[in-house]
Length: 88
Image (tube, rainbow, N blue to C red):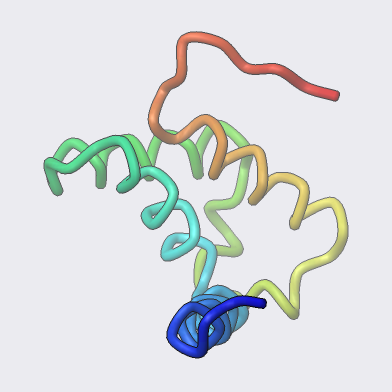
């Protein structure tokens, strides 16, 4: 079974994702690969523009439609500019 601390961390992370606007989601996942804040901000902005989420960056994910959530997922995946994207 998972330890108490890992369970607490998972609950906190889930709470963060549910209450963070799309920019926070994309920035989090981009930050796993890009540590420089200025570069990461540019990459996040590029990903938001690429998927067309500019008008929805202040919305919480619970308020987004299924299609907009899909765009958010794509933005999270492409923000760090991976060399290869596998879609299934």
